[in-house]
Amino acid sequence: MEQEAQLVQQCLQGDGSAWEELVRQHSRRVFNICYRFTGNRTEAEDLAQDVFLRIYKTLGSYRSAYGGFATWMTSVTRNLLIDHYRRTKRDRVTDSLDDAMPVVENKASSARRPDEQALLGELSSQVQSALTRLSPELREAVILRDLQQLDYSEIQTVLAVPEGTVKSRINRGRIELARILQQMGVRPS
Amino acid sequence: MTWTCEQTELLLTDYLDGLLSAEQRHGFDLHVNSCERCTPLVSSVSHAVANLRALPELETPPRLVYNILDGTLGPRETITGWAAVRAWIRSLASPRFAYGSVSVAATLVMLITASGFNWKKPKLADLSPVNIARNTNRKLQKAIGSGSKYVSDLRVVYEIQSRLRQDNELPTNDESTAPQSTPQKEPGRTDGTAPATPRQQNRANDINTHIQVLAEELPVLSGKLSLVVSGKLTMQ
Image 1: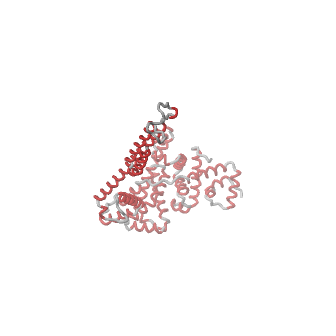
Image 2 (image 1 turned 120 degrees about the vertical axis):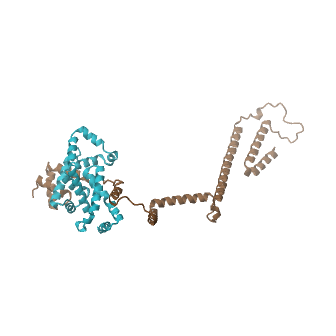
């Protein structure tokens, strides 16, 4: 944590290599959060770039007392994802209407890049699909807890909600995810 | 404490994350094992969480870091002067470069050794291109010569073997059954021995011819073979 605070200080003094080091250390984590939230690789890549652009501009507002740099960065990522979700809500409503038609759904799934298909196994693909069908507030809680392995206090900091709310969202998110997976035919063996 | 289905659903995350006390856990288990509604719920949620945690962490797209750096720091400046030299020296300290260097060095050592360079008594003159070319050419000619000689020797030996085999396979008539038109005794012969028949004489002549050919083809053996030849001749 001290090393990260030192890197941040060096960045603020204009040290480009320190910034590069921070980017290399955290780009994978940010990209994965974005991908799991959106379910789209290209969109996740663009969002990850936007996250680092925002971090670069607001680096001066980071205080080590806030928590680890990773927690602060996760918080920035989450805020940007929610902004993006709200901004693209209208497009998604149209998409969800289209998704109700089986033919369009098949077309959309076949349009997925082959390397993406290979990357995700069938089960992983189904779990990812179920995840993106959760409401954003449940989705972010589940992603932070079960994929990013954050503890309750860190999630509380990132989401800026009380711990009880964090637990409740994780609980509801998991139950809802299980229900969606069952609807998709994914059942415990 | 009596557990209800609502309590089970409410505390499911605490149960799965191991946050329940021993007493709560006991009550939870007792209820779930006896409740037809909660058993599949706990099972399906545990399964969903396990599947979620099994999702692989994706690799960062290769161009992402460069795009971020270009977007924040701007396009990278070309390094010149001492900074470029230092960057180049730093790049040499990579395992890939070390492996490549060792491979090139091993190849060079093999080539220099093959060109006739004496590592025990190294001379600078041996490394001049003219000497390297001359030594390489000499070694090459020597290798070609010994190779062709070996093949030629093999060919001669094989030829002799095949001819001897042919001779051994020729049907020979029993001499005793041959009609004797002339008496055993020859005019003027007093040693009582029978002379060689024409067929035996021809075989002996053939073998002598083969050995002479072999002697010519194999100079190393020529002395011994000459002795053999002369011995044969003496015997006849």
